[in-house]
Amino acid sequence: MPIEILMPALSPTMEEGTLAKWLVKEGDSVTSGDVLAEIETDKATMEFEAVDEGTIGKILVTEGSEGVKVNTPIAVLLEEGESADDIDISAPAAPAPAAKTEATAAEAPAPAPAQPAPPPKRADDDRIFASPLARRIAKDKGLDLATLAGSGPRGRIVKADVEAAQPGAAKAPATEAGAQKPAAMPAGAGSTQVMKIYEGRAFEEIALDGMRKTVAARLTEAKQTIPHFYLRRDIRLDALLAFRAQLNAQIEARGVKLSVNDFIIKACALALQTVPMANAVWAGDRILKLTPSDVAVAVAVDGGLFTPVIKDAETKSLSTLSAEMKDLATRARSRKLAPHEYVGGSFAISNLGMYGIDNFDAVINPPHGAILAVGAGVKKPVVEEDGSLGVATVMTVTLSVDHRVIDGALGAELLAAIKDNLENPLAMLA
Image (cartoon, rainbow, N blue to C red; front, side, top):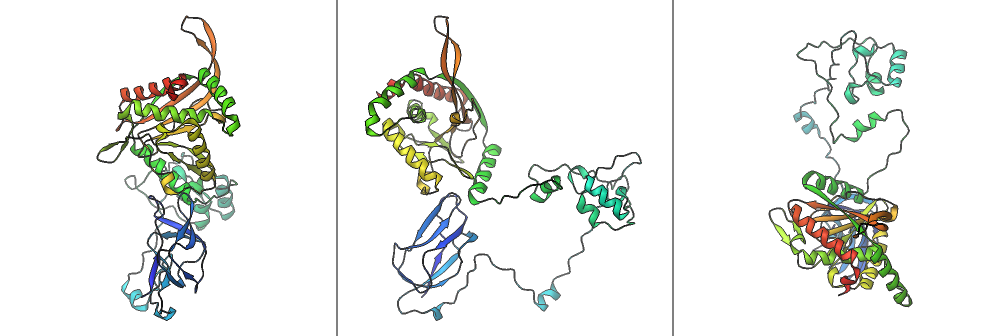
């Protein structure tokens, strides 16, 4: 019998996707492993391969369809001996609303007409808040603004309120008990409410793609549900910079050039081994303490960011870390990472030093236990151990910690280990 080809879940967080492109057409024969389509997930565009062999009997979801739910039928595969006449299923990407029949229309009660909210009661000397455009339209229509209820923020009368009003409309009666104060705009105000604020101003609407929606949802969840606390340290980089220059001169012939970020990844990976209780993630009703140091590194891309994960970072050489990080970052920017390359890890690094940022607080990417925000290395006056005044290259880092996983003293111990590794880079090679 015909086989339904379902919208696959190509990443752990994927609930819906966009069918970007079909690479087969109806009537094509396919075998297991053939690429059928390109599908955009919340993070990347990925190829979708056939599992069974047969003939594409019918394509149910057209190219460019957005919001196709996981496990929705997108095509039908016919086995040997079957024809399109055997197909007896229909699975549109987005079901159309059912047509109303006379019977259902008779059974369903007619919706009650919406009643406009009465305007708030104003004293004679109360100021009427209205946009300049609303005032001008009201004047042209001969309307008394005092008779209108404002739907804008804090009860402000806007263009839509005036256009919906009828000339000579009487002020709705309101008792002291029935009068309502306009509610303040909620933190999660919808787009309609926000757009009213900017009525009359020039702006461009930018639709959210899957990545932006995911970033917004996950980081909102992180700030609302994770009890963050922050630890800061200044790290002197002079020894590291000198060691890096020496190493790069020696390995230049191999085409390798180590960055400061490569040393930071290595320092964090080794610190997680030194303080193993901090190498942990929050798992809802328990804590998972990881054995390897799987370190995620934030990579900025158009419209969002990826956090590719370098697994077993504590066991890898600096040159291996450098090559792997360059490859992951390149493929992240072209959205060609596979889910297993950006899912997981216990710890993350976000480095904005190359943008001249001195210090900042990063948001933890759940379920990670911590994230290190790295600022720029800047020459500063310092007091040496002998009390003399000197100049050193100093980098400020901030460790954002999930207090459910890591307590203050443990977080301080982890940050001290990171600092020690960076200030004594030779020890990282031992």
